[in-house]
Amino acid sequence: MKFSYLILLLLPILCSCTQNSKHPQADLINRNIPVAVTEQSIVHFADSVDASLITMEKRSSLVYHLDETSMYVEKYSMNGIPVLYKTFIDNEGISSLVNNFYFNNDSLILVRESKKQLKPNTEVLEEIRTFFRNNIAFRKDIRTALSSSTLKDKQFSPLKHTNLSADNYASDIKTFNDAIEGNEKFDLVFDSFLSAPDEKYILLKSKIPNGYNANILVTQSDSFTDSLMIDPMLFKGTKLNINWKIENKEAVYVPVAARVTSANGLKR
Image (cartoon, rainbow, N blue to C red):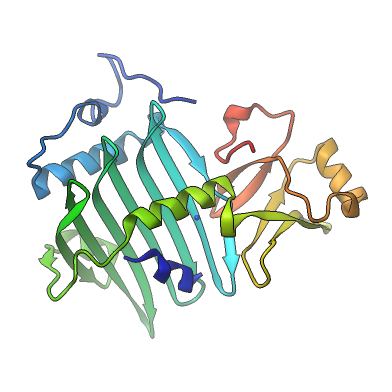
């Protein structure tokens, strides 16, 4: 779906597999899938990517907030080459959306959209798949259900009356990278440090009026967070060079003393 819609609703190198790898699915990822790909081969490739995520390099954006909506992005790479982007969007109390963008040899081959819409006394689950050849969409299908278990048993049906060329996925990917790198509309600066008896947060805000904001939970303090708490005005309006990781859909601060490889966020 168009990332513009998502905005309205609001973000180590791969361990090489050996012959004795515990993730044999990665063998498929390392091979080029045929040019004349079919829906079945594309789905098989995407499933292999999902089964191998633990072996991949992972980078996470902050969790960005805008009005009642939050969103963040995860990027998975092999040998520095992106294989999967995952976006998570939550419109609290109304809906949630997870989108997966799968790549092979720098070419987008599949987009999976999983949406949960809350209705009175029930919820509606919807899954949409868009298939690509040479970065051009050639098929879109859909299935819906009222529970996760029921959804898995449903067959996909062609999504009719849809314009396959309408979505600007190249623009979407740029936006995802901006969210991860903290560029453009995702360029946030330090605003304040919230210190309460039970929790501490680093509060960030956009340079753009009414733009995004983000919070980073501090569970382990260090000399840097102590400085933020003691003299916040010294850092106000500056871009912080810190690490974080995503836990339970929340950005959590990684202390300076912690190993860089322990962070699922990024060091900027």
